[in-house]
Length: 399
Ligand SMILES: *[C@@H]1O[C@H](CO)[C@@H](O)[C@H](O)[C@H]1NC(C)=O
Ligand SMILES: *[C@@H]1O[C@H](CO)[C@@H](O)[C@H](O)[C@H]1NC(C)=O
Ligand SMILES: *[C@@H]1O[C@H](CO)[C@@H](O)[C@H](O)[C@H]1NC(C)=O
Ligand SMILES: *[C@@H]1O[C@H](CO)[C@@H](O)[C@H](O)[C@H]1NC(C)=O
Ligand SMILES: *[C@@H]1O[C@H](CO)[C@@H](O)[C@H](O)[C@H]1NC(C)=O
Ligand SMILES: *[C@@H]1O[C@H](CO)[C@@H](O)[C@H](O)[C@H]1NC(C)=O
Ligand SMILES: CC(=O)N[C@H]1CO[C@H](CO)[C@@H](O)[C@@H]1O
Image (cartoon, rainbow, N blue to C red; front, side, top):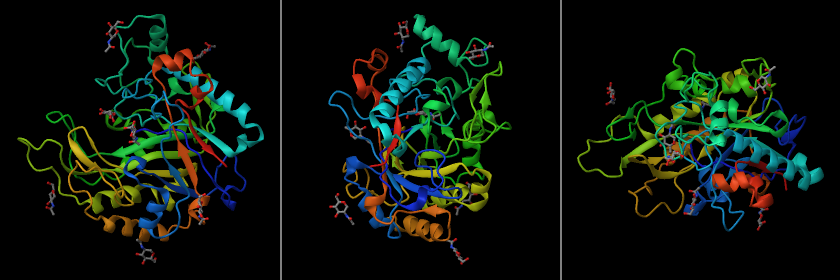
């Protein structure tokens, strides 16, 4: 549920042998990358230096492609971006973008991967957010969107509606699929309006977010994202029309297990609940999906991007990082300069044992990723011309 977007990947090693999709690594290989906090002067080189092992194979950031459009993210199924929950507008804009860029890139288009990357379906349709779907809006556009969104046809947009299928532009317009998956804690506090406890993620949590959990759909989501788009099963609408035949490579576009440092406003609040340490939380998270058994079960998971931010959200100051804090953390926040080298050292020790992880040879060989978006009306009208293509698009560009 953070900004995610386009991505420009620079790469030149043998990692992409036999790639089925642009920039897809060879079977059995996984690219490890990070979304760094450009706003806090973090950089690929600084992350690699903190990691002190091998250069990560890709880096993600937001880029400003237009003076009028602020950098933003994908997660088009969410209710926290202006363009969210507008499936018909989204798909039209997406197709326009991809068509434009493939043409503009010409023979270089094999060096660019366009990633369709929603937020994990747990909590969908994320009611009560600023851009939640507005049922009172009876414009024809909104009614058409409602028809697309109400996938179970019960006259409501609710958790049993599919959080992904209405937004999927079609296999021919998507190179990779992506998903944002987070652990924020174990309980949402209605009192403080947010997740706020430091607890170890339950075993299987990452997997349940990735592929839904029929035994606990309200917690983890109903829809099996991996099965839909990355397995050979694919997915169909209720009338049997194929939406995707599957087999797409998957990037975990953003992931983190958060450590809550402090309340943003500590007035009348108890200590932060939970007693798990930062290391325990993060270690328990990465071991859930960076292991050979998981890769054998989900072989199309070809890349993972950690979310390297320390920021406030809801009621708490949160550390999402595994590679250590950016050089210049927000000076208004609590003391985040406290070194967390125990986490990055443990991660390096852990991945040294994993032969399936691909690294770059130098920082200049790593791939980059970027993103931009528009307001809903800009996206719909197309007034921003070719730059519209970047809205909602995540792409890897092989330079
Ligand atoms: C960086 O700062 C700009 C301007 O404040 C903001 O629009 C953008 O969302 C920020 N990007 C990230 C990744 O935090
Ligand atoms: C929802 O739509 C109605 C009707 O168009 C409008 O009056 C109302 O302001 C909208 N609500 C929000 C939160 O945009
Ligand atoms: C099946 O559903 C899809 C979209 O939900 C629609 O485009 C298509 O026309 C339908 N096909 C039939 C045969 O009803
Ligand atoms: C941490 O909290 C749990 C649950 O409240 C408790 O069972 C456990 O004993 C605590 N561990 C420590 C080391 O305090
Ligand atoms: C890495 O593998 C070695 C040898 O099997 C083992 O002793 C060590 O504990 C492993 N390290 C981690 C962090 O899993
Ligand atoms: C990486 O690229 C930068 C800028 O293009 C250049 O200044 C630097 O020397 C390069 N570093 C290496 C190790 O090639
Ligand atoms: C289910 C879920 O994660 N909802 C969150 C989505 O993001 C918005 C904005 O950050 C939060 O307010 C929601 O709680």
